[in-house]
Image (cartoon, rainbow, N blue to C red):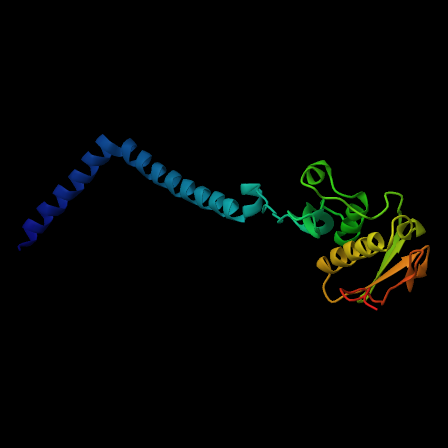
Length: 210
């Protein structure tokens, strides 16, 4: 390319530059300004995203785990008659109220006797209604049940035998690997009732066998 041609091209480029600047100069400045604003906006968005990530999940959800607990039941032994009028031990169940000690609850319910529904089904108790629970002491693998002396009064030998078996069956059904002892008025019982039924302690299914 000759020098003359180069000079012509340069002159055309210079003229084109001034023409564009004259016609679109303001728009070009606006474009550059817009680009600067866009860059600033992107930085702001990123900063706000960082703030959102910092928020704990627990605060956003506002939910706590729901605790659930299964109902607990105890077995109580009363008496009843079968179809041949023979005496039998009738097991009933009661729901343990929340916060109640299971063993204390079942002994208290035993002393109360059968409820109206259970009575309508033939259940009854040989434990005297005047019997009071003086205390229950649990230490290690040993449980002491302390009744008032009313427990041994009223009824004959058969009645006392039946009430003792109600207590034994109910106690053993609601404990595991525990030795159960019966006290009356604060003293361990070796004989019970007017005829002096001998009791082997700790209580078990054979405690009344001679």
